[in-house]
Length: 477
Ligand SMILES: Nc1nc2c(ncn2[C@@H]2O[C@H](COP(=O)(O)OP(=O)(O)O)[C@@H](O)[C@H]2O)c(=O)[nH]1
Ligand SMILES: [Mg+2]
Image (cartoon, rainbow, N blue to C red; front, top):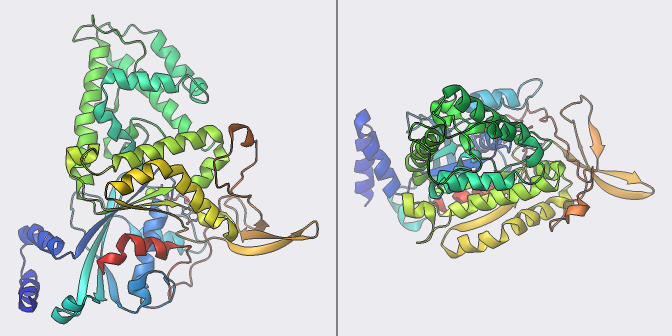
């Protein structure tokens, strides 16, 4: 076996580009490659998470900043390097840009990103597997980290819905607030149109534009809704402006009696084409190759937005979780043959709460997933929930209020230049009743990144990122 591995290694150094795929396969079969997918709705913290993760690993030799990540903590790490990514057709994750912004003077959050991107790390480590240790004491694990919008995951259920069924579902969600009011302009436009008339591009475009605007409104922090379909309407990636994204659900679709050249028939064709060329393609090209998955959830922002936003987030997350249903019954598995065997749900920005509230945040996320969680576990995917902060922007502090010492956090709010100490509120463990979501009950503030210019010797300050790493990758070393 020793010579076997050496021969393969020597052979790698002479590889022609076309042999790269073969190398990929050999790496995989030797368990030296892992695809880690990072997702979450926009602004949930994917870019910051990946940037911090890469930084922690690049600086893994220098500090004690990852106590719960065994491979690093036990001193087995020999070095980490960013390597050319294997998938040439996927845009690169711009770690260089993001870290420059975060560690700039003054530090700023990385610019928002959209679409999919990828970065490859090569991690050299000392094996603790007795057999491998003998063969080749220093091993390399290639980690491909893929960042993709969580919005795209919400499209999976469309594969099982006809245009009529999907339209009906959307219509039902527009019967209650806030969607009822937010969809008013789009609905009243549809009311004026006879969709059985021959197709008219201008009408089609206007209907889809109004529908897309409605989705964007739902997404604003004020409403904070998550369950918005189709996912590409708000996160188009490279499909911006494509006719494939120009359709809209319709109300009161007649069962029969509309012609092939009618507006309705065209809407239906585009919907089907979206399913085929966007949804299926994404799962087929990318999703089916993922080994590990982390889903980032900005629970605190949803608290700020209120009860409706919370319910919507819960439904969206459970929808995502359902797509991971493994086993015979899982839709994804049936269609694409999934490999994901570890799935982590993480509540991000845990530095927005006081340290004593961290277990509450974790518990809350766990409870929200409880039902589906058990199913997934049952079907063979190891699932975990965690609260983390990829870049810790606050410090724990204490203040005295009416003679009592209370726990606070101290940081610089995004819209200020001065640090403040504040008590952001308690995180409930169970979902509060609708009447308990009183105006202003939750007010979790966004913070500026801390000054990081001098962190070169160690990883960025974080909360529990090492636990996430241990769960997602620990067994690979
Ligand atoms: N305090 C704090 N804020 C964060 C953290 N991660 C992300 N953020 C905030 O969330 C915003 C969105 O993060 P980003 O990674 O760009 O989200 P993405 O759209 O999912 O890639 C950032 O600009 C920050 O304001 C974190 O660990 N702590
Ligand atoms: Mg991003």
